[in-house]
Picture 1 (cartoon, rainbow, N blue to C red):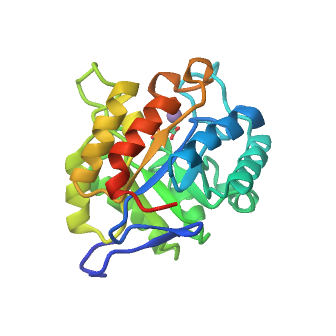
Picture 2: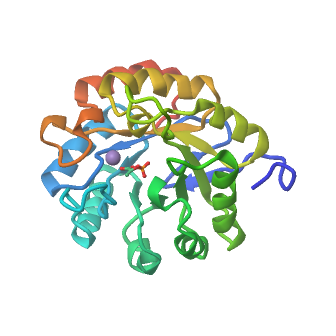
Picture 3: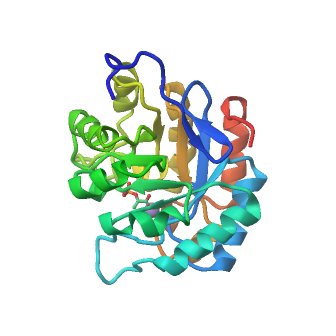
Length: 262
Ligand code: PEP
Ligand code: MN
């Protein structure tokens, strides 16, 4: 994935859109798929303000086994239905190498979560698919480890890899994670892969999502993936960092000069 191997920027197709190569992509949606009603209401907002894709987790790798674990295949069905209804390509997290074939029929892109960045069996399995794959940085992973994880996917033949900086764990407790925007600028010099930023998990605080999304533009990222929920108060996961319609509208108006049209 090094620039020594390829000088031009990789562009990854995501639905009708392209991630990388000079445009700024916004993907938005709830942390987790909770119900059809929740997804349709949230997609309405995602679409209205011009994001090009929708997110939603069906398999949720939660810190606590007592937290909502996701609707699993039922969630994928809802995600696919939402995607078709609103014309928004969809991305969801894959947590099991054995799920590749089953999930391919439901989604436009895979996400490998922070907790699985070095699940090498999963990386290889996704590498044997051609699905665009957003690879999130592990919470304690160095940039080199992140790039080597990307190599695991790329090396198997899947060139549609998108790197995602989502914050790392540091001594700082005020924010959920420390969003390492150095990593974005650094990786853009070393790798030809698109790099996006997740300011939702990167900060864990709704009010900080917009400033850090704008910072993502400034440091050269190819896009952002943002958590949006029609009613964050009742979200089953990550409500505290999810944007409601007003927050998302404001963010999109601020990002508008940089965003590719839906
Ligand atoms: C998510 O995107 O909802 C998620 C679990 O992210 P991460 O893997 O970055 O913690
Ligand atoms: Mn989340």
